[in-house]
Amino acid sequence: MNTPDWISQAFKTIDAQDSKAFAALFDETGEFRFANASSVVGPAAVEQAVAGFFGSIGTLFVVLLGSVVASDTVSSS
Image (cartoon, rainbow, N blue to C red; front, side):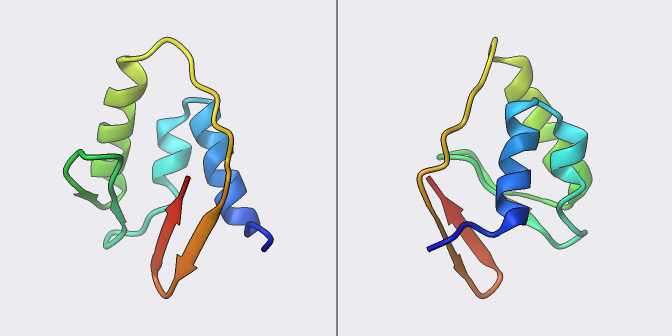
């Protein structure tokens, strides 16, 4: 199964630690959840949560193993 381009682009923004570009992928009702953290909703909350995570680490490199897209939900590993 091919990974949709927009999912690959989302992971590129994560590799770049660009919280603003990542948050721009969400609309006001978009929900983001990372691991066991609480979900956040909307671009501003997503940007704040992701920026906080990026600020807590040195570097990051993501290897996308796969994604499942079902209706309006995406799960990636």
